[in-house]
Length: 275
Image 1 (cartoon, rainbow, N blue to C red):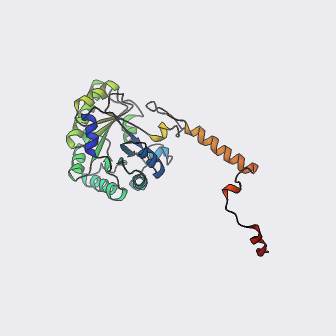
Image 2: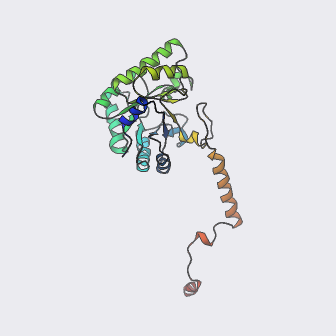
Image 3: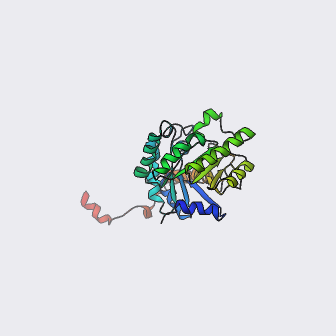
C-alpha cells in the first residue's frame, strides 16, 4: 500500500517529523522508496540537474510526465507528487485541471504541486474539488525567479512575512494537504507551521517545519555546479563517480578490462570449423 494523504496529515497531528526527497528516474526512486521515504517529489528542478537548463522555466509537461512515469514505476510505497511546470496552471482553472489530470492519468502520480499562495488558491480548490490532491509551495518560488530578482530569502520584512502567512492560510482553505516553505526565515516558518493545520515542509526554512525536503542530487553531492545554502551533502558522489570513470578508462587502455570473467566463451575447437 502507498502512503496516503491522511497519513501525511497525521505526521503533523502526532508531531512526527518526516521527509520528502526528489527523484527523477526509476532506479533512484526505487532506492529512495526502499529507504523508507514517504513522499517523493518529481520536481521541475530536473530541468537543471538532469536536463541542463539554467532554471525551471523551460521544463514542459511532456518532460515532467516522462520522468514521473519512471519514478512511479520505481516507487511502490511512497506517495509520488508531480511538480506542475511553469504556466501549466496559470492561464485558466480548466488548463490547470487538465494538466493536473494528465499527471494523474499519464504520469501515474498521486498528487501534484503548485507554486504560489493567494493567487492560485482558487485553482487549488478547483483541482482538489475534482479529486486531485494538491501540495502548495510558497516563499522562494523558482518559477517566479525573474520577478523575485534571484534566489533570495522571502518574508524578511513585516509586509512580506504577513503575505506569506496569508498565502499559507489561503492554500489551507483551498484544500491543499501540505505546503512547501522555501528559503523562508526559520522564525517565520515556525510561526506559519503553528498557525495552519496542514503540514509544512521546509527547504531552507529552519528545523521547526513539520517535514523537510531536499533535492536528491544535492543530498548525494552529485550536482557539482553549485551547492545551495539549504543543502547538506550527506555524500560526495560526484568525486566517486569521476574516480570510477577514470579507473574504467585506465583499465580499458591498459587491457585490464574486460577479463575472461566479463565475456561468454565457447570451446575454441569450434572456431576451427569457421576457417
